[in-house]
Length: 400
Image 1 (cartoon, rainbow, N blue to C red):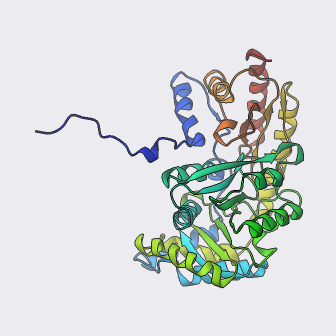
Image 2 (cartoon, one colour):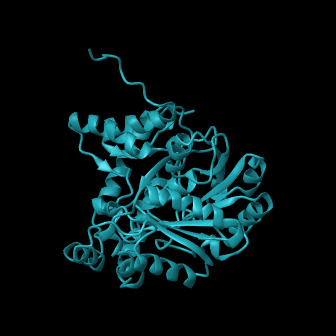
């Protein structure tokens, strides 16, 4: 006899949401109903008119042909680890350890798993990337959001961070440049955050995956500013190197040796247990970091033009305002007087116009505010069509 009872899922799955992919279900409904879809929802440059640089592709193909298809070191291919270390040290980071993972997401999950016990807390930016919420939920840890200040170019609110640190707090996450707002932290903000981390014995998780896609201003790695605070810096091939499907990321640990070494050793236990990241793809790391960077000029020229079209198009719509993003390929416009949840608004927008964006609640936002995320990777004509559709749609929704 076999049981017909449904398998009960683990409780750790109950609070996991990923808005970026969740809206795809609504998009499929709209497509089935005959709507032409305009995708402004996912940060994958290869879905549009961008290509992985040839020297990165060639390195992986050569590795496959050369039969580098077995296991490699758990922490990463030695030449990849050396290239990451050299790049970090050239930017002023005092490197203690480097490890390579199957995407930056795995690196982040391993680092959180080795640090946080059940019931302990981590401060995360709001708005911010929802991966951290999902991992902390799985670990049965407590996510404590801190707010970015929309009136100050989406800089982290240091007073809000300070007010939320308590005896359970183990780490603070910084996404810089930020997803979903496209903001870049000032040196002053970074220095203030490091001071809080030093005062309260916190680890800083610095997610810097968009560091080479700065359109205006300067990006500074927070780990380069002080050497007495433990900082884990995450990066990878997915964004600036236009290889999101390559699933190759890395983590750089810095800080006082005596403080970080037990933590590094704990992370390496997880690294050994999962064997290794993709061996042939790791051969792309050295040429990516040390090879031709000229393609980035063309990428940023396209993005800057599309950023400007996006900000102008959104600001021209009555009832929408948009802080101009300085990096990456996201904008996080505000719905000024909408009288419904932004998730309801976005689902209706998709069904009625085919414009696929992501609701702001999926990334976090201050209570009482409503936003949505726009990806400005699509060609200019697509963006303008989408903003025209939003402008026509918004007056049909309830307003305060």
